[in-house]
Image: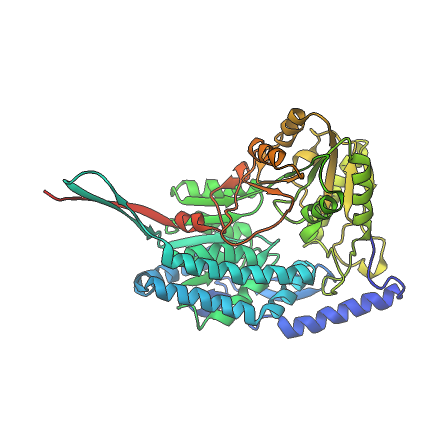
Length: 508
């Protein structure tokens, strides 16, 4: 692990980081930090607010409205008024044009969005730029799907005509996580709006700012009430949204633990659900894998977004024939990663999103250490005074750990990977599948037959081969087992935001 400008005085570097972030905040913060309901910026009914914090400096970024149940009620009413008054009457061509305009806006202000995401979330600016390109691309993808989404004719006999129609639910609720704040919003807004629904969206309380900026920049593009944003905390704003009787469809991305609560909240109203939940994904290295490429892919699999990815390849299975060489190269590559201010171009890992998340990650690391696990590298927070006020954790590789241990079975959601050695394929597959999750997996091999076999044998909704964390628009994404239900980022997502109506017309 390295830090940028290590030769500089730590106090000077810390001061420079704070100044850089203060200047960036002045330039990119949204002018509105209120709730966005019915096309208007309004205060919460309670008048309460909360602070969102810069995880790099520990300083407050902005004060945001703390919405509650009354605000969710207002937003749902506004969404229904918009649906019944204007949006349900728009043609698919008009919905397509709206989504394309949103994409154009994201492109135009992509650098501002990226910098704001780095400030609010802590992700490196280089990765935030990738996110913004994907945000625009997904809005454009769903703009195209809006024109291509169709029902079908069912062949029966000459006595009847049977056809299906795909109709929107009306008003849908969406709850967004903090690890990819604007991208996850695009994954949900795109298909919901393309299908003809109006939306009430709750961003994560840790990272509400890029969604607010998106609404600020597109309020002249999106008809009033079509997208409503209620910022606030889960119990006060998220739960009332999940439990609301007038929400016809609900989409949630977050932990499996909270996903269960969302399901319970939706149960009384039999609200349809799309859930993208936790993961503990295996990454399998075969003995014939290209060493250099495999190491590079493994670094991406676990350390992208500082490991705060639900699909992170956090369990690494390396064949015994290549284990020593591979692990030496992997450790060296991990130690060369730059952990520093996310606004710096050279930074590879920024801070975790909050001090609470640091504490959670370190608790798993400490538990593994107490159980006798060995640390190939990392296992601590950076020893860098310039970063002492931030939420940083060093890239960590752990071996000699029991696969049944809590650190292996549960989602750490940080830059921590457990390493296992395998020789027997069937035994490796059994371990790879021996978790409650099934969101993603990776396979590294030059043998196409082995790749196809592993793809079939691993229980996961998304399996990458010789790549990882690749999310082109149109590729369905979602999980098996306790990693959720439904699919996002593809045409299937639009289907999840519509209902099938069948018309059976007698011809005699």
